[in-house]
Length: 270
Image (cartoon, rainbow, N blue to C red; front, side, top):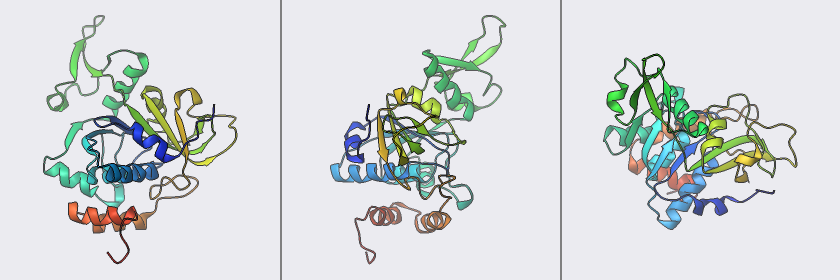
């Protein structure tokens, strides 16, 4: 089944108050082109999205979503630009209490997705036991192991409404190769209601796949769709662009100038 579409065909499917999950990891294989197309669609339609952004690690693309006013809640165990500095809009709105941040760790995200994959409401684990994290997340409860009597954390199932994953290579049916650094992309593709693959290149057929067609709803061709994050081995991190972002953006006014120029809504002279 041919699942190739254009960005404009997917944008209306992203509904306000949805949980959107972003594949990749920090500055690697992030679906930046998809995010910029979504921001442009939001500006054109004037929709108020109030999205929940789910990401193992948040980076440049997530910061663009936050700065553009599309995100109300963040669920991630790290949000930043690694050696290039803080994510300025996440930092700005987070420090002012204008962004809801649900504390997550690798364990809570992994167990939550595994629970959803298993079709159950929670997954027990030892993570967080003996820490202050449960006081920050009263929705994460404890349970007593009926066999050993041990107290365990019961991490609630995580079910994204839509997941966007950038791939190195995909075929029209939806099979995709994402490389060796898979982050949580395979788990996200199984748990989400709607799975969109953007790919550097579309090939007629793949003889192997990291993400398989039955879990994928749409495929979009997006050459250099991860820049300025990397898409190894096709291209590396665009450090110059990231440094320009962190050096020029620090509040809503400077972000608005940046995003308007990025989307081609202003001239170089503006």
